[in-house]
Every structure is written in structure tokens, then in C-alpha cells.
Length: 81
Image (tube, rainbow, N blue to C red; front, side, top):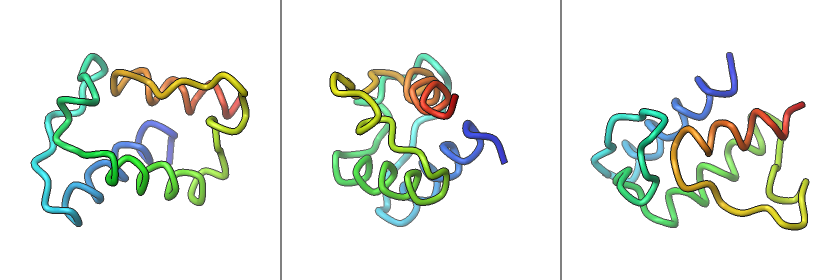
């Protein structure tokens, strides 16, 4: 499973679990418009750390939460390198 596919799967799973209407996951989707709230993002980040063994937020002291879905995916892909 690729990083992108795991992220997509987690977004979809969390949206189902928290009964949220998820916008189509395209790269330029603003995460604020995704339909998910801050709790959902916290759950996604925790699950991705467990599934991918990657925590890009602790890998960099000046990590900034990505703004778009594509930026979120890129953030994780860069941390995996």
C-alpha cells in the first residue's frame, strides 16, 4: 500500500466512523473544506503514525500542518524519505 492510498483510506474510514460527509480527495482540496474536524485529523495523524511508522510532525521542529490534501500527502511522503 502506498502512502497516498493509506492516507486516503484513513480519511475515508475516519469520515465513516465520525459520520462526516467527506469531500472528494483531490490534491487541491483545502483541508478546512474536507468535511472533517480537528478531532478527525488528530485520529488520522495518530493512525498514520501507527500504520506507516512515520511522524512528520516530530521529525521537524518547525513542522506546519499542511493546508491541502495534496500537501498533506506530500508532507508524509517527504517524511518517509
